Length: 573
Ligand SMILES: CC(C)(O)[C@@H](O)C(=O)O
Ligand SMILES: [Mg+2]
Image (tube, rainbow, N blue to C red):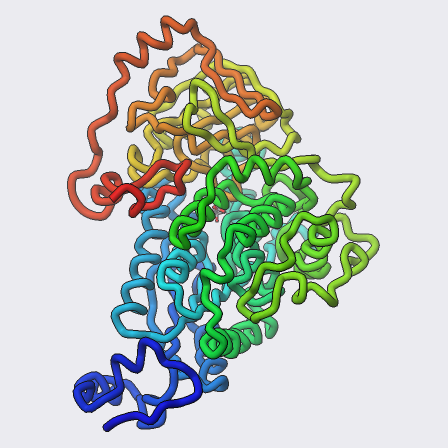
C-alpha cells in the first residue's frame, strides 16, 4: 500500500509507515488501532506520566485523554506512551531522594528515545511533579519537533478541621514545618496528625511557588505551553480545555513549520527568568533552565540570572516565604496580568514566539495589567512596593564557592549573615542535629557531600530548612550546602555550592567553629580563615571516591556536570 500525500507534513511518520516495504510497521500499528486513514495523518505522541504514586500525577491519565481528543479533532493521530515520575514530597529526607534529579535525565532520555525511535511528527508532553517538567522540556528541545507542554495544574490548599474559616491554608511544606514544631514541643501528636491528614486534599502539584509551579510558569513564559495554562488548578474544566487546545497548537506548528527552537531563544529564556523571579520562584529554576538551554543549544549561564535579577523586583507574596498559594493566584487572575506589567515596564521581550504562533506581546494584547486583579488583592504587590527591589535568587561567589552558589534570600531574614560553622557530612546528620537542638542562634549549618556527584543526585534540603523554621530559628541561623533546595525551603539558605565537596571543593575544608560570611548584596560567600590555613587545608582536600559503583546513580555521578552548569549529563562527553 502506498499513502497519498496530505496537506499536513508527516516528516517522521512517513518514513515509518509509507511504502510497500513498510508493511510490517503498519501491520504492528493496525494491531493498536490504526486504520488506513490514520496512516495518512501526522502521528503526534502524548508523553505523560500518570501514576498512583503521587497527587501531582494521579490525574494525568485523565488529562492525556483530553489531549488525545484535541489532537484527533485537529486531524492528527494521537499515540500515547508513559514515562516515569518520582516525587520529592515523598522521597524527601531519604536516600531515595538521590534519584530525584536523576529522574529529570531519565524522563528526558525516555521521551527523546520513544519519540525518535517511533518516528512521531510531534508531541504533547504532560507533567505534574518537579522533574517531569524540565525533563519533558529537555526532550522537546533536543528533538526540536512540533511540541506543546501541558502542566497538570496546582493542588488546592488543605485546611485542618478546626480551621472553619479557612484562615490557615496548608500544603506539603506545612507538614514538613509541623515536624519541626513537633520536635520543639509546640505541636502534639494529634496536632501533627491533623496537619498530615489535611494538607493534601486531592490531585495537583505542591501548592506554593515551589518547583512545580515555578517550572510551569517558566514554560509558559518560554512560550512552550499555551497562554494562561500554568496558573491553573489540577481539577477543573480550564485544565481539561487546555489539554484539548494543545492538539490544535501542535498541529498548527507542524503545518507552519514552527519548531521549539524557534521559540526557545535566548530572549525567551530571559522572559522565563524574569517572570519566575518576580513571582519568587524556586532555586531549581536555575538548574533546570540551564539544562533546557543546554538542550536547545542556547548559551545561558548562572551570571545571566544575576544580570536579570538586578532589574526584577520580587512582587508576589507566595509561599514558601509569603502568605498565599498558587490556587489563590489562580483565583485573582493568574500570572498574565503580572506578565503584562513586566511587558509594559520593558522587562519582557514581547517579540518572542509561543506555540500558538503568536508572540508573547500578541497573546497579552487584551490583558489588562494591575487593573485585571481585584482591587483588594495583596498577592501581587504594586510595582513601587515590592517585597524586595531585586531578586531573591542570588548568584554568589567567594573562596567557598569559586564557581558559583545560589542563595535564596528574600531579605525577610536579612541580606547579610556572619556566623559559626556547624558541619554535617550529609542531610540525615544535619536533620538529627537540628531536631536535637544542637544548632543555635548564630550558627551556619553546613551540609556537604550532597552535590550532584557526591550524593550522588543533589538532594533537596527541605527537611533541614523546615526543621530550622519549625524550631523558630529562621531569622537566627543560615544553612549552606553543595546540595540543592526544595521550592518549599525558605530562610537564609545558600545551595548549589560549586565545586562540590566530592570534587574537592572548598566546602570540604570547613570545620566546626570556622567563621563564614555571606553577603547577599555584594553576592559573596567566604570562609574567614587565614590564607595560609586555607591553602594548607585545600592541599589535603582530595576528591571523594565514588559512593556507588553500579546502576543509574553510578552512571550519573560519572557523567553529571556541576550545578553551575545545570547538572546535565551530556555536557562533557
Ligand atoms: C516537595 C516540593 C515542595 O515539591 C519540592 O520538591 C519542591 O522542589 O518544590
Ligand atoms: Mg523538588
